[in-house]
Image 1 (cartoon, rainbow, N blue to C red):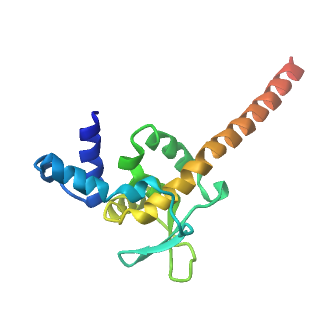
Image 2 (image 1 turned 180 degrees about the vertical axis):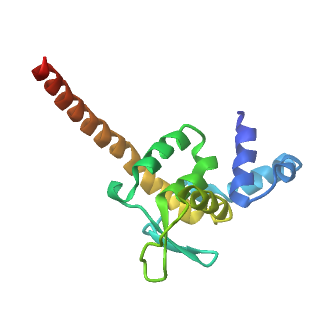
Length: 167
């Protein structure tokens, strides 16, 4: 993807514009609109907001690996293979769990349908919250992968020892 295509793609995602609208814009307008997004190049100057309300529903974001379900972690690996900007709403949906007004987790009957609902809901979210959380998450995620890998290596060593003792 060329720089201009990437710029157009980012503008469409961040501003919730159709690609037709972005593709029909003159280069000067594209440049001007893209300059308005320069805040994305700076680190957020306020703390990450781990509980938030969006369209009348309350959510809490995972801030430790213990809050992430195993299947969410596997799905995160699949989502991270693509473009992070395009997948930000999916990352947020995987790492956000719905809570009531007091912060207590809600019971979910159909996890897959609920996940898809959150993905659709988070597509309409303004950029600053997901952006600041994605910076937090991108700092935590590699460390989480290292921790999991080290745990799996230790488990494999245990299994190998058990196998050699049985022989």
